[in-house]
Length: 302
Image 1 (cartoon, rainbow, N blue to C red):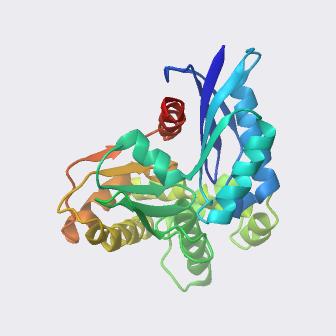
Image 2: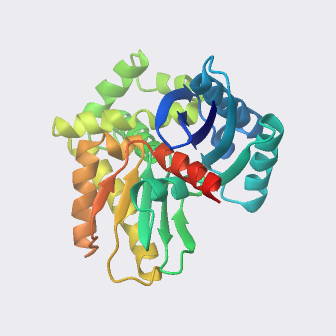
């Protein structure tokens, strides 16, 4: 039997969906991060291969088409590197390599002008114009951007904890939650704990859920972090939206930070209203890898 595979490679995890030639999903495989900018090319390829092999399991058969939707692969040379790797690793397979926004759009709004926002470990906004062109804003990595992302929220939480410890900022429930989460007693211990961690970037991003928890318990500092993150996300959309050539279009959203962030979602919608951003529909997509499956299936149709 022959199969098609769609992969969503992100900064936290990589998900591969195995489907039959009609596009029906049969199995899934999960592995670690495959964002080139976060883990490097070799580690990204290892995660991609692992997720694909886990999805295949012990099934006999060939992969007819493979679509890789990859965070961090925004440059042409990056796409080409992954394309060559996939052809060598899976000979005889039709291969397509795209950025993670394209599979999100394929899953949530396959036709016409649309907006796509990803808010997970990092953040980025893409727009598909009336001519089918892709434009972007944000997503430049944690050193240059990723405003409103899980990493940005986690970093803001750590700064708030240290400022409260110094007396430079107000006391916050985040101190208790972050120390408990890290198994520490005092804020200064966080410095070595984070910097010497296995993956500091992911560990910082994971603190975003504590910001959500603290905000739910009416912590003013955490609520302010969420509001600022929401404003940054809305501002990024506001830059892209006017360039699409459409008066109104759908917004498709994914990324664990906002998918599972109840308070961030609410703050984001408020921020969009404040900027008078209206959408024909707002659709949350839990598994953009389904869009990668669709793109792989279309390759077989020619």
